[in-house]
Image 1 (spheres, one colour):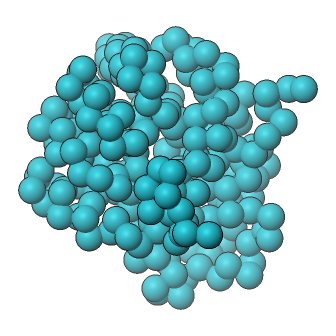
Image 2: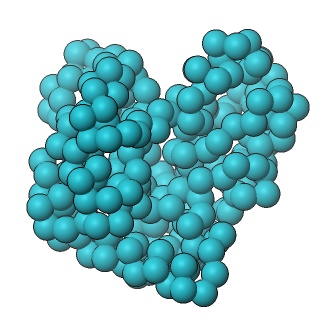
Image 3: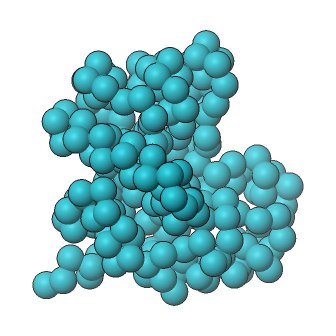
Length: 228
């Protein structure tokens, strides 16, 4: 049985502000082989403004709300705590070591995305707090020359720590439009550029996103403790 006969998800999708464009990007995701997405600020930007009509979207396609928390370390911690019980998927970019540390130290963050200064200390903390390590394939699709080399170097280093500390991994191409999607097979191939195995890549688009959604369910308290 092929590894690619499963359900795939992209957890960092930027939806446009027009319903027709939203339908196009969701249709493209489905056509590329995804069963669902997590859209950034879905509630704030689209649902609360009545822009998104869920009845017009495919019934067999799921859309979750993701929130990118950002700011200085103190504000970042406050933002994570603010949203930690909402069921929203919480993502922080590891723009520098100080921000990455503040993010992984705060429980209920779900994904630390493409941290540029990851290390043993951060890896251990992320493992203790069950935080997944995100890899942005879009960063190597949309860069060239030295910038691409730098992104690959960061991802290769992060992969090493993910394996060392048994961190869950998530792959995204961070699409802004229907043209930014790549199929799961393409994503796995691109993951191979920095050393990710086909199984790791498939898990990062399937079993890990599903597990994150499970943890955001209302009955989940912490690993091993759920309200039935």
